[in-house]
Amino acid sequence: MQEGKVLPAAQVNRDLLRSILETPRWFWPVVSLLGMIVLAAAVTIGIMVDRGLGITGLNYKVVWGFFITNFVFWIGISHAGVMLSAILRLAKAEWRRPATRAAEVLTIFSLMTAMIMPIIHTGRPWRILYWAFPYDFARGVWPNIRTPLVWDPSAILTYLTSSTLFVLIALVPDFAVLRDRTTGWPKIVYTMLAMGWEGNPRQWKLQIIAGVLLSALILPVFVSVHSIVSWDFGMAVAIKSWHSTVFAPYFVVGAVHSGVSAVVFAMILLRWAYGWQDYIRHEHIDALGRLLIVVATGWFYFLVMEIIFGIYGLEGDELAVRALQFLPGDHGVAYNVWMIVFVGITYFLPVILWLPKAWRRNLWIMSVACISVNVGMWLERYLLFVPGQANKQFQTFTWNDYLPQWPEALIVGATFAFVSMLMLLFSRVFPLVPLYDIKEGDILKTEMQIGRRTVPATFRED
Amino acid sequence: MATQAILGLFEDASSAADAGDALKASGVAESDYQFLTDIPYPEGAFGERMERHSLFIWTLIGGALGIVLSLIVAGMTPLAVPMTIEPKPILAMPPLAVICFAGAMLGAILFTVIGIALSLRGNLASPHSDDRIAIGLIGLLVNAGAAQAPQVTEILNDAGAVDVTTNRA
Image 1: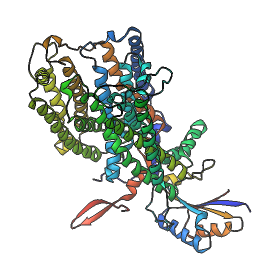
Image 2: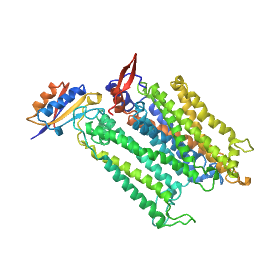
Image 3: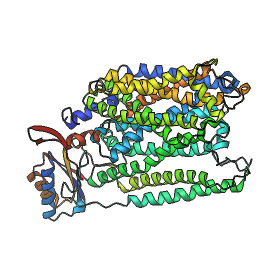
Image 4: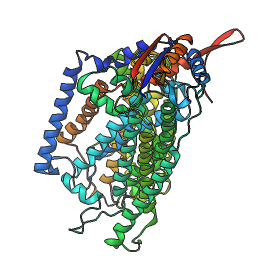
């Protein structure tokens, strides 16, 4: 698993800092376009706050629609950072090096985006304060800590804070390189962020231990976050089809599936946009493709178990929801067709594309597979949440359906523009591929003779 | 007596380590010189002493504080304003466990990062740096008195430094 040539440190600096020290011609037009989409969504949110949630498709039965689906989707994407960075760092996997930073940064921005969704969904965003934080002594309004809807902000804020600090600590040596290459106010900012970094053995030791320690600490947080998000549904009293004990691991594995796919696609885009062919190589995409086959199959197991457990109890409410999901009916929305599409594009299509080595190394095919997974995973959440609410009770006269309206579609679509814009802006001020990690990998690279073959090898301290 | 910061730059780790040994042999205290690199070299690669740290203590203190604070917030809230939903207890263990776990992890991570920031002992005002270290050269920075400076410069040159620069510290 070592391809590509060893590059001189000067070239690594030049190539990986180019996105910061020079502005590509496409940069500001693309950022402006994405910014306009985000602005349109912000105006729509303003209209929604002014006129109320009545302009959405939400109704008295289906109260969690596009916004909550999108919230869970972005929480899922955020799991890529820790999966790739912390686990692979602890496992000392050499091929992690170019992928970690982009994955960690994607975690931060997708978490920020996810947190915005329930705030928009409330319709009266300022009231979140009363529900989530125990602060209002004068009015006696206190949050009910027995509900997962209060556990959620505590877990997600912990994860966001941890991920941000994790990225900042990993960036310190790169800040020092930037400090020495910039002038004016950027130099002042990088000097502060570099915390007096000189690169002596003590600082490097602390940097490495900090990476391992923070990885070990952040991993349980990563598991807890999506487990708690799953309990938002699993513990909802009113909707029986959500009462599934398999939800927590099912959500966590699903999050890793969509998150790692998103990172692969982001890496392919970055490679293309910044010309990082020497750093994000086919071998890295290949390794991630193999990892994704395992993750996807794990996720598929939980999907099947969730359906089987649901049907096995033969409870009327549960069977009604399953019928809605799987059988053709006279509903306005053909959920059964969407279920087939969702399973096909989330598991079968991508796994078939990931199996041959040549296809894993084809960036076009990998892009299609990764986009397919994420469209599918978005659909998965939608098909998990909406039919359950539409057929909340066994009595058919209480059934209702949900048809999303334009404000929801626009706001959800704009979240993709928002995350892309933030990633681009980040790449303009901080290196998206860690300089010292790449250089360390090059230094550790070597080759050894085994019989008549020369094979790549890596020296490690321990 | 004024001290000078003498920086010798080496192309490979062995020459830098030899220079370190020569400095030690000439009576320069280990605390007066340090190696500067752009990547983490294996500990002891330059013959330097093993560094000790107390990061884990920061982590433990942060975790403990996090648990205590979240217990206070999550425990006192329902006790102060009880919301009775029969037959559920006012002070339920599962929510306390979930919130205390998040609090413990947040505290541990925050304190670990504070510990790192303080333990780095970075030179915030004027960090020693040279562009050439970022392109792979290994720096050996020596704090020497005016009388010792010529000898240090000679040792660095003899060990194969590609350049030696001097700044008043």
